Length: 102
Image (cartoon, rainbow, N blue to C red):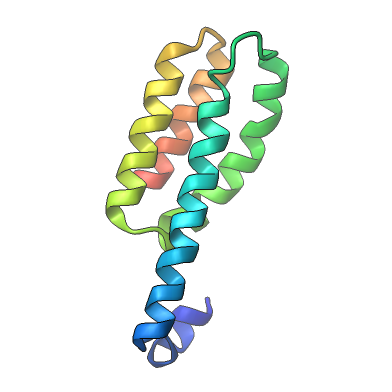
């Protein structure tokens, strides 16, 4: 919200570098959560428990991350969804991917 309200305050090279680092950290954190679903023996209930948080952060991440990062995370989420058997988890990951990519 701050970036939208006061865009001139975010134009310096130093601020842009900082934002790039933060974006990279957000991308890696989300990637880590999604790929953790591939851990052998992981309880589907645990994965389902993470879906509300992913759903909540997806619209914010979609506004904050660069388009290439959104596309990459969406592709990872879809790939992970394709590897899982739990229908609810699969649907949640696909919804996460769709939100990121819009």
